[in-house]
Each structure stands twice: as structure tokens, then as C-alpha cells.
Amino acid sequence: MSMKKKVTYTLAALAVLAGIGVSARLWSVLDTSRSDVADNSVRLADFHSTDADAIRRGEYVMRLADCAACHNANFAGGYRIDTPFGALETSNVTPDRQTGIGNMTERDFFNAVRQGKGDHGFLYPAMPYTSYTQLTDNDMHDLWAFFSTVTPVAHEVNENAGMNFPYNIRLAMMGWNLLFFKNEGYSPQQQSQAWNRGKYIVDGPAHCSVCHTARNPLGGEVSGGYLHGGDLGTWYAPDISSDKESGIGRWSEQNIIDYLHTGSDEKSVAAGPMAEAVEHSTQYFTQDDLQSIAVYLRSLPASGSPKERPFHLADAARKQGELAYEVNCSACHGLQGEGIKNMIPAFADNDSMQKNPRNMIHAMLKGTRAPHTDSLQTAAGMPSFAWKMDDGQIADILNYVRNSWGNQASEVTADQVASMRKATDAAEKLKTPAQH
Ligand code: HEC
Ligand code: HEC
Ligand code: HEC
Image (tube, rainbow, N blue to C red):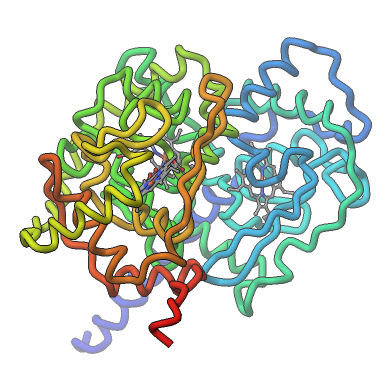
């Protein structure tokens, strides 16, 4: 046999093998046999659960999974999610027959929530079925019972009308699933019950990694980056591994429980997308579940992310920063950067304020509001300084708070503030008459 022919045969054999590999993978990605445990005869609009316990448990699963955050409080959808590939709107998931999911059977519901197969075909992964796939059969049955109690709302949504070509083709999501979707339920590991419950909530219903894990350009989670911090456009979801520098390795179990339950661990106060997660979801978690989450998070290996390069604040800049801080910030954040316990974040002795500065710049430009929770009802607000300070002034004051009271952090530059001002569409600084 000639050399060339041999090579061709080998290549052909490899191609066949690869084909088998892909189709086996495709088969496992598309396999919906897990949904066979669900009824396929009664439609949601015709089903009215009378099992009060199942309904109550289902409502709790809905809180763990934060369905209302995206599908709106009445579940009628229409909430817009901007993606790099265009805008998506969330579906109406009330039992309305025409515009909602009233015609879904329980099995259809399982297929949609756990496997991303909806009424119109493959769902976009902005619906976090990639995490919900881990939901247990029992949690799914309860969720179904709860959704049967939701009031039907007629509200037409055209989910992917705002997606750009070719991303508006649902079939493309089959390819996405082939690359990134792990169609598997949660399998308990040889760890304590609390640890397993914590991992189940974090990876499954509460989908923490959707925000806290970095993504590749196609939107798949970066392997090896699990909970090491993720980019959310103009916000940043920080590293929540046990790394003492970049993560939350210095937080106690109680700090984590308090932060998720109230929105504050005494020093930090959740802002932006995390404030929403606390307000709509984590504040409702039971103390047992919060403790399980804390046990699990604290067991994660440190990310070992490279340390940020420290920055030396020159004396003149420090003097200026001190003055500007006293005038603009100290009334709320305290003269010594001590903040107000559980209400206004501290800068002193708070490592969260010495990491990636993106959220700090965001807060300065747009202002933010702390979560409103049953346990902390004040929900204090941080005013925007966009109209009062230019890019250089905002960078200067952040460099001051990030490098005072024992803090040491990387430099915030005026360029970073300028690009964030653009990205968040924040106001320009008002010009004083003398500048005209
Ligand atoms: C992060 C946002 C987000 C969360 C949280 C979320 N969804 Fe969705 N959901 C979406 C989006 C976006 C769509 C539309 C996707 C599409 O059309 O491809 C969707 C679609 C659906 C569909 C398919 C509807 C249809 O007509 O095919 C169902 C069912 C659904 N969601 C149920 C739920 C339930 C139940 C929960 C909580 C367990 C939940 N969703 C949580 C964003 C979300
Ligand atoms: C919608 C996106 C999103 C989801 C979902 C989310 N987070 Fe966050 N998280 C953030 C953002 C953004 C911040 C930064 C908040 C700030 O700067 O005040 C944050 C901050 C945190 C912090 C504080 C870290 C620090 O160093 O200050 C912890 C702890 C945390 N999240 C845990 C969780 C857990 C546990 C879950 C799942 C139950 C979760 N988050 C779900 C976006 C999210
Ligand atoms: C009226 C009171 C008030 C004033 C004045 C104020 N802040 Fe805040 N600030 C807050 C509150 C409340 C929060 C928490 C908001 C949240 O969690 O969404 C906050 C949050 C922040 C954050 C944290 C955002 C994050 O990632 O969690 C930074 C940074 C910040 N302020 C900087 C400043 C600086 C610098 C000044 C002065 C130029 C200032 N603040 C003035 C009340 C104030």
C-alpha cells in the first residue's frame, strides 16, 4: 500500500470516529428520557394542584431559582436581556393558553426548564437551563405544582425577534448545546450532607456560576474558571472561591450567610445585579440552606488568580483625595472609611474594595441602591457623581479610598472611568460658567 493511501485511510477512519464521537455526544445532549418521570397528558391550563405542601415547596424552588427575576413578578415575561448577539425577551410562563405555557404538559415543562427545549424549539442559554438541568425530579414536580397556581396573563412575547442574524435561528442552539451543555442531573459526592446541599443550590437552582464564572466569546463557561469571577458587561461578579487575596477566603461562614440573607456582611453591601439576586432570591433562603452554601463555598480551592499590581499614591494626590473625600463621601462612608454597619459599605478593612474596581466606578457614575430585604429594610442609596466629577476626579477619589486606612490596591485610571462613562451612558460632568 502506498504511503499516501495509508494516510487517507487513517484520515477516513479518524473522521468516522470523530463522527461517532459527535453523534454520541449529540445524542446525550438531546436525550430527554429524564423527563419520562413527568406526566404527558394534562396541560398546565387544565391542571390545578391541590397539594398545598407541594405548592409551598415549589414556591421555594422558584425563589432558589429566581424565576421571577427574569420572567417578572407576574411571570408574564417580556423582560429584555441584552446579549452580545442581540436582545432576547423572556417568555410568558403563566398558564395562559395563547401567549403563555398553558398548553405545556408537565413533561414539556421539564424539557424546557432542565433541557432547554421550549415551545418554539431550542431555547437560548440566557434561560439558565444549563444550571437548572441539575434540578431533582422532586423539585421539578413541586415547581410544576406551583406554576399551576399562577394567574394566567395574556401577554404576547416574541422572544428572539431582537436577535441578530444568524443568532435568531434557534437550530444554532443545538450546536451551542453540543459544545457547552452538560445534560446531567446532580450526582451527590462523598462529602457531608450540608456540602452536597450547598453545591446543589449553587450549581443548580441558584445558578451562581452564570454570573460568577468567566465566559468565552460564545458564552460558554471557561473551564478551570469556576466561580473565579465573571464579566457582566458594566458590572463584575467577583471571585467567590476561597482565595484569600482575590476571593472570599477571609469571610467567615456567618459573613457569607449574612450577605446572602440581608445583602450585607457588615462591611460590604451588595450592589447592582447582586443586590437584585439578594432582593428577589437569596433573602428567602432558609438558614440551613444558607449555611450549606457557606460550607460549600468555603471548601472550594483558592483560585490563585494573579494579584493586582499595587499602586503608590503620591502625597499631593493623597492630600487632595482626603479633602474631596471629606466633602463628598465622609457623611455616609465615615471619616475613617468605616461606613455604617449593614447599610453603607466600609472602605477600611474591606478587601472587596481593593479588588477589580469596575463596580466601584459603576457606583460612582450611576449610583446604586442596596437591596431591600425583610431583615434590612432601609435599602440606602449611593448617589451618582457623574455630573459633579470628571473622569480624572473619579479616578483620583477611588485611588484615595483604595489606598488609605491600610488599603492597598491597583491604580484606577481616568481612561477606565471614561470608557465606563460611555458604556453606562452616564451623564457628563456639568460645566461651570468659567469653563465655557
Ligand atoms: C436569567 C434569566 C432567566 C431565569 C432566571 C429564568 N428564565 Fe426562563 N427564560 C428566560 C429566557 C430569556 C427565555 C426565552 C428563551 C428563548 O425563547 O429561547 C426563557 C424561557 C423559558 C421557558 C420556555 C417558554 C416557552 O414558551 O418555550 C420556560 C418554561 C421558562 N423559561 C421557565 C422558567 C422557570 C420555571 C424558571 C425558574 C426555575 C426560569 N424560567 C428562570 C430567562 C430566564
Ligand atoms: C445576576 C448575577 C449574579 C448572580 C446570579 C449571583 N451573583 Fe453574587 N455577585 C454579583 C455581583 C455583580 C457582585 C458584586 C456586588 C457589589 O459590587 O456590591 C456579587 C457579589 C457577591 C459576593 C460578594 C463578594 C465580594 O468580594 O464582595 C458574594 C459572596 C456572592 N456574590 C455570592 C453569590 C452566590 C453564593 C450566588 C448564588 C446563590 C450569587 N452570588 C449569585 C452577581 C451575581
Ligand atoms: C448619601 C450617602 C452616600 C454618599 C454621599 C456616598 N455614598 Fe457611596 N454608597 C452609599 C451606599 C448606601 C452604598 C451601597 C449601595 C449598594 O449597595 O447598592 C454605597 C456604595 C459605594 C461603593 C460600592 C459599590 C460596590 O461595588 O458595592 C463605592 C465604591 C462608593 N459608594 C464610593 C463612594 C464615594 C467615593 C463617595 C464620595 C465621592 C460616595 N460613595 C458617597 C452611600 C453614599
